[in-house]
Image 1 (cartoon, rainbow, N blue to C red):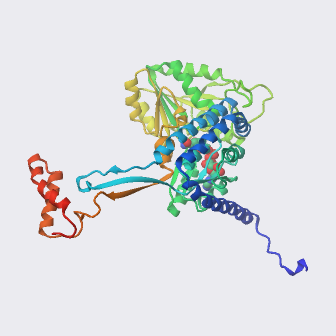
Image 2: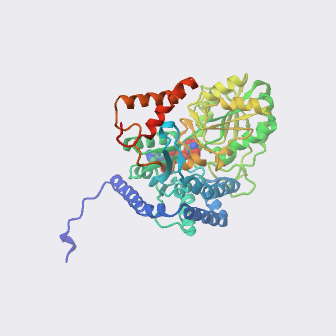
Image 3: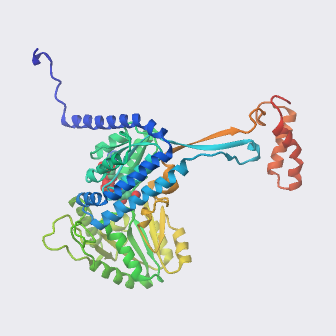
Length: 518
Ligand code: NAD
């Protein structure tokens, strides 16, 4: 036997080889998921919920390990990692385990409309199949997990592609779920960059759930449209915070600075434009400046740190360019946080407050994804609402006031997926509250019952209570039948009661006619 007998294949160009291995990874994962999904779906929803409950317990036990991975990969403070990535996810696991079985249970219900008096319906909520989930790096454990939980609870299999910047934060999910007893193949994590994500979108999945930037979301929506598969998109935001003149300014400044600067400002749902009524402007700016000057910036691992470094130097460079654009057009820096201790290395951007900003500047037109907060003076609430709504984004918004009725009136007029009164950002951590964006901020809803709805195909099954009786709309057309139909129209829709009652005998005849009789 000689090796020389076989002609070796010509070497592949490197990019083709890479593309080949990317699609091989996707194909293998989707095929395994496809194999595993039917058995998972056949299990009673209570058994799937039990796996999620065990996942909760495993995650609680391993919470510090997971928070540590998130801090190491992402740079965020240990407090942010423990609260926003781990503890909130525990709440979602509990909520999903408790509510999904009830949501999935179907029972017979009445069907509205006189014509359908004999009918009853049950809505079967079937899994969609294999869900491709693509996640970003900013809440690298919370975001993928809170999509995975409802997907699994509803009987789907999942192939998850986390961000290339935080592979382990989502990679650990496989180990947590394995320990919780999830069958092999039902959840797989595939690692890679945008090319892997793009391959997954075209890899034969039944739905794509994407969280990330609007630019990538648009590409994914196009790819899904070409294949006619559904997608849910949680995209970027430039949330407005509206501070009304009667607000408790200290409270508003503390809340808005937390929501803007926590996670080093890299939060999708975060007040990125602050509009303050003129009468409160100076007071609010002073209170916010004081809050920023007291921030503790440092390494994520230090328990004292309130704001850590950003994800990477390229993100700092984008934020620098957005700030410099504002400064060149006349904006002013009114406060920055103290620098981290000497010798602390990392891609830091000092939390910064800008005033004298207007819509010619990138900071009000684009999403700023880091610790930069522009504050805008407005004449009144009307101007604040108009300027808040004049954005391509519509993820969330907040209104700060002591007057609840006025706050609610303003909130109702904001073009945003969610609105909070006297708080911001936290809505995304509430498992029962539907969450998502309008305009460029997304399509579809996560969380709450609306979120579960994204992971099922709802199939109404309609039954007839008297299966042997002819249906009034079936063929037996003729003059008598026509009169019966007329009577039905009169009885159901005529404006006066007397006229409606005149139709009653005809309706009874119509509804009770036996098969074929005329
Ligand atoms: P991104 O769009 O660059 O990347 C997100 C994910 O998509 C990553 O896993 C990436 O590898 C993948 N990807 C990149 N190109 C792809 C392609 N062509 N096809 C398929 N997948 C592709 O976003 P990011 O920088 O990781 O995250 C920050 C952005 O996410 C911000 O805009 C932020 O507002 C947004 N975000 C939104 C929410 C929300 O709930 N609405 C939550 C968190 C983050």
